[in-house]
Length: 302
Image (cartoon, rainbow, N blue to C red):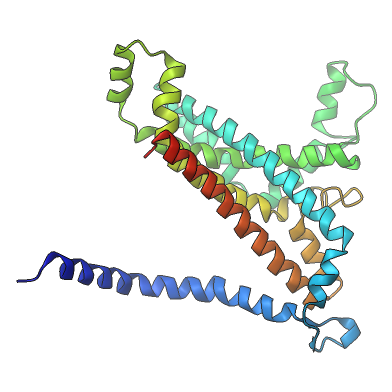
C-alpha cells in the first residue's frame, strides 16, 4: 500500500515533469539574453575597438558610476514609473468598482473601457503628441476657448510639462489594464459577505476597508508588479511622443540604452546598462512584493 508521503512525492515529480518544457523555454528566452548581456558587459566593444570585443573587466560599470546622463535617465524613469503606476492603481480601482455595479449597458461600457489598452502604444504616443501640440493641439484649443490662456502652452517643450504629458498619456492607455484585473478580483468576492457585514451596521466605506480591500490585495499585487515592470521599461510611448526631450528630461533608461547601442554602437557599455537596469528592476519588484505581502499578513488578507 502506497503511503501519503510517497504519493505526494510522485505528484510533485509529475508536476515538475509537466512544467519542465515551459521552464526550459523561459530559461532560453529570458535567461540566455541576460547571461549574454552580462558576458558582453565585461568587454569593451565599440567603434574605438573596431567592434572587436576587448576584455575590460568592470570598466563599463565604473564608467556608469560617473555617467550623469545615466543617472538622469534613471531619475526620469523612477518619476515616470512611480507617478504612472500610482495614478493607474487609484483610477483603475475606482473604475473597477463602478464597472462591478449593475447598471443598464454595463457590457458595452466594459468593452469600451478597455479600448485604450488595446490600441498600439506607438499610435497612442503619436496621437497624444498632436493633442499636446503647442499650435494645433486640442488641449491648447480647449484652454483658449475657455479663456484660460491666450498663447499656446508648449507642453512638450518644457521639461516638467513634457514629463506630465507623458505620464498622462500612459495613464490614459494602461489604466483599463489595471481596472480589468481588479474587476476580475471584485467579481470573485461573494455578495453574502457584504450582506452579513451590513446587517452589523457597516456602511459602504467600512465594507470596502474591511472586505473589499483585503480580499482584493492579491489582484492589486499582481497589477502593481505587472505595471511596475512595464512602466520601468517604457520605450515606445516616450520615443514617439517626446523622443526623450526636451534636454533629456523624459529620456528613460530604455531610451538611453537604445541610443547607446544603436546610435553610438557602444555594445559593451550598453550591455552593462542592461544588466544594471535589470538588477534594479528585480530589486524594486522584490521590495514591493515583500512590502505588499507583509501588509497582507498583517491585515489577514487571503
